Image 1: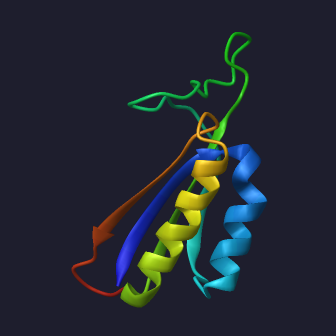
Image 2: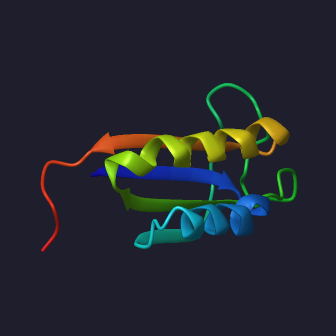
Length: 98
C-alpha cells in the first residue's frame, strides 16, 4: 500500500476524481483550496488579484498494483496542460490503519 499526494489546478478536479473512481481508489482526503507554486515552471496558485487561480490537493491510499496506472493517467492530464500544474508524490506506508 502506498500514499499518493496529488496537488493540482482546480480545473483538473473532475478528471482526477473520475480516475480515482475508475481505478477503485476509494478512500481519500481532499483539500479544496490550497496555495502554492511549482518548483520548475507553471503559474503560481495564490488566489490573489495578480495570481487568481487556486490549487487543490488529494491524499489517497492506493494498493501497490494501482500506483503505476494512477500515475500514468495523472501524467497524461499534466502533459495535456502542463502550465496548469499537476504533481503527484508517492510514499511507502509503514503500517495499515486502525
